[in-house]
Length: 160
Image (cartoon, rainbow, N blue to C red; front, side, top):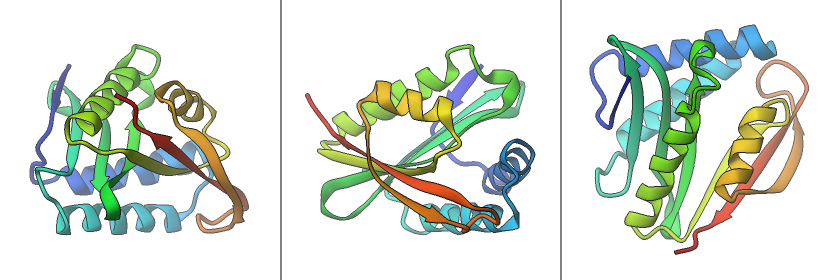
């Protein structure tokens, strides 16, 4: 397993496809979710600044096993996005490793705050976010991904 911090041709499309297939299979999300991911990844690419943004792509034998993105936002805040692990790579510590890399970069770049958006159905992810120090700060009903759900915002105050 290797983890790289650069995007290669095909990565964005593959990550969009992985999200679309996985979230449909596991949570019943519709094509709206895949389009949302595509829009967000385009935003990441368009606004990418290597001093402020980072991607971690975990690969095994050339196949993407998981990913995590850190996007800069206004006023010195970062956003955690597109955290995904293929099912075969869950439970082996890969998610914790990506989270550790995220936190180290966050602190190294001097971010004081971070946030993320998720949904109420992602229990394992929520547990990991709690271990990272994020706390649930907002919850609202939504049908944005083709089904009723609760969107959740988690916030983090970075400590040294």
